[in-house]
Length: 116
Image (cartoon, rainbow, N blue to C red):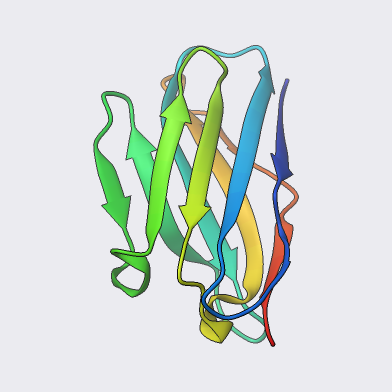
């Protein structure tokens, strides 16, 4: 059983920064891809960024140049550094982890609110 524990959400002013973290605990085979998705009110869940085994990253066009995803293999943790935040970044952010076993897990979500 794998659990994902997210942290780092909150309220921030436009132009500010936040750092999200997601720790994967439990047993499974090695982690393949770790990523962050978000869902704003009334919208579908969308990929924000992900990082594969070996370090290949993928970003949504809307966050390129502002967000940076990274992972600590030993700690089984993925981070999302969010800079120059905009009101349109307001959403619930979900951590997603895909294992080489084929299993796919989701966190419960952490709310990010960008508002003055």
